Length: 127
Image 1 (spheres, rainbow, N blue to C red):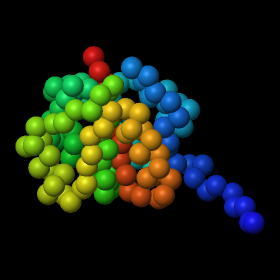
Image 2: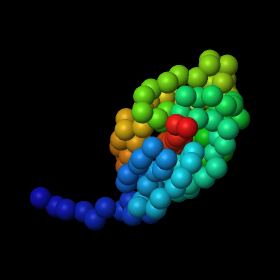
Image 3: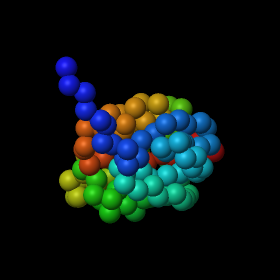
């Protein structure tokens, strides 16, 4: 059996989270964040909460600027869904999307980014 060194050392992965923070590659970030393999954008969706109040179409469209083919949005302790009109920019940009609770969103992101997929994770903390 041959073993190969993991070459994903420079890839952002979720290493922990709580009600008010997320750990990306062992660095703590508070508030809403947008994460791709190579970037972490803090202050994402500044008016939005885990219940999706204040979420805007522009917030979701920011995923395309990070080269996303898939956007996963973590909505706090439980899964919530946005108003359909908010999803139009994603549909028009041909970006797949899924809304999940935090644990599922973080696990799914880590799996997909580990596979080298063009995935972006948006996390909306509950207030």
